[in-house]
Image 1: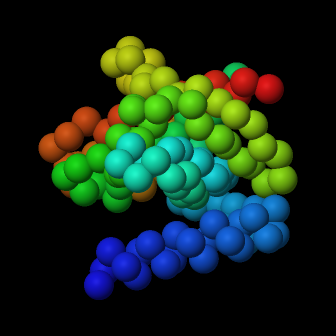
Image 2: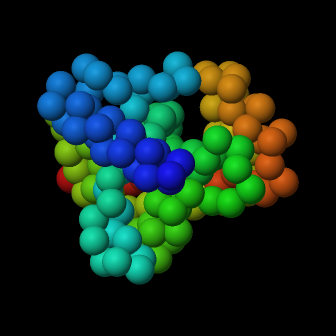
Image 3: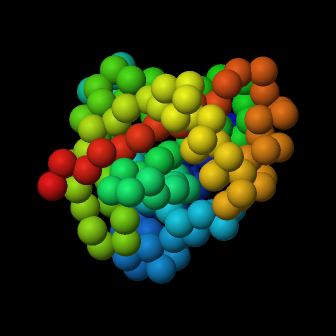
Length: 140
């Protein structure tokens, strides 16, 4: 039941974000929000989720925190299988290639993230996994 409710909430959030150009749902945990569309590794269908992000030059950085749960979110597995994704920020859209941050990049980016949104430090304490950070490189 919880999974169905969460799926419905994400769908409504994505709908409202698109409808309002990010006016509704455009910020979370003090971070701006983008819509990430991956291709489901099992279904082959597009899957869109709203995610907080950081900027690193022309690159967008997303966090596979999953609220500190012990497993990675489905979108992370999807982009690992197929790194070509779609990104939407407000009314701007682009194709992008996803790259998982290497340990050195992750360390620097994680420090920036925790300064921008201290809540993520709590997520790190809730889980035993290292929370991946993903770089999205726009292609157009």
